[in-house]
Length: 215
Image (cartoon, rainbow, N blue to C red; front, side, top):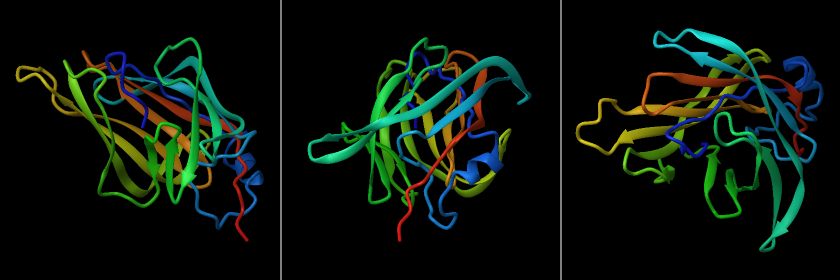
């Protein structure tokens, strides 16, 4: 899941070809299971939403994107360069170097971003602001169907439990999550400002995704 820094400020992202139809036209084999397609040229376009206290989502004029620009060798392993914005309203994208390691998506530092089948262990912890919270990321909601502007997809999610560290904190444990669609990649990202009940999402609108085939 995304690193919850900046007082839990993050953004939603949406993307994929013109929609599910265009995306699947770019998929080489529907029976190959992958929730995090890592191939140069793949990209995702997202629209941002604001969510009020009763859960009503309002689309904004803010758009975002992520894409894979290429690959590189790091310590003898092939990694793919993923460009994306890790924090809401951040003006520039950052680059993460990712690879698939036996069903785990890991970055060049060894951090696990996604686990296709491990729904029991903590993937990583967010200790960036222990004065306020301690975050624990784990897989969640296996094979749920989620709908975004681009279509409906079978998904698996990475959920961050945001646990307050102050005894008198007025906020309970809350959750931020990334949702990944089968053969598509990330279709939704949900987060919030820590010191309020204002939530945000990014939802996939269009993009281009090709997955690696295995004969």
